[in-house]
Length: 166
Image (cartoon, rainbow, N blue to C red; front, top):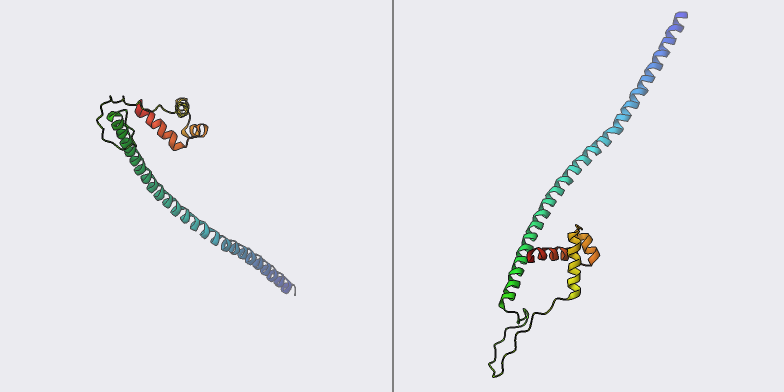
């Protein structure tokens, strides 16, 4: 029986070792199974992010092109406005740009001299000077707009017209 007890003890040890190895393998497989969905989700998220980045690049390119087109249109409008202002200035100082043209009536009395052009609004001129001085000091258009009460677009227009007039 001595050999029988030894064989039984060895069999019990082998069963315990097998059970421990089984439990260890089971734990590893469970851990791997839990990781597979996470890895799949991570890969799906990476693909989604890549697609979103591509879409963002495309939309930024389109927006850039639209902005360029609008800037070109604005430049053309400013050039047309400058031409119109030059035409008005050249056509005579007495006529208003908004008044319709009338035919002159010949009379025996001498015609009055043309009226001088209306003086610029001093308060507005002071605000323009404030815009110019802030720009000369190196301030950003947004800061100038905030401190003067003009919009950023108005500040850009004022500064743009200043460079054309100067």
